[in-house]
Amino acid sequence: MLILEREMTLCRDDLLRALQFAFPGAVEARDEARDGALKVGAGGTALEIDLTELPERRIGQLRLPRLAVRLRISGGTPQDQQALLARLDLALQRGGG
Image 1 (cartoon, rainbow, N blue to C red):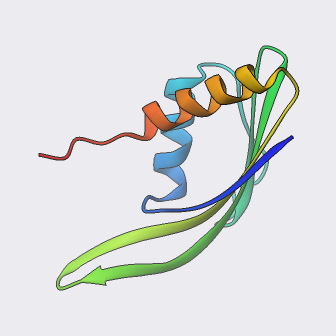
Image 2 (image 1 turned 180 degrees about the horizontal axis):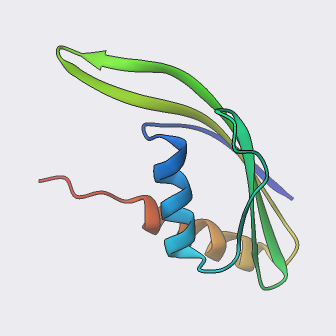
């Protein structure tokens, strides 16, 4: 099992959209409250995501939502787990020009 903790600058809905893009039809939202959990099954590998909303980050007039995200990847080979994580990271990339 691979466990990672990250702070992400996005809201729960944006994370859910990215997951649905990366893993169409494989996302299960277990709690619609502010804090909650998401689950993704991709082949024999499973991704469980626990979310906690953090206070927004303010830079001047700019307000950025933040989430504390705990990722648990289980099943599959280490290569399968890394591939699932790479798909997630790719779906979360944003333009930066």
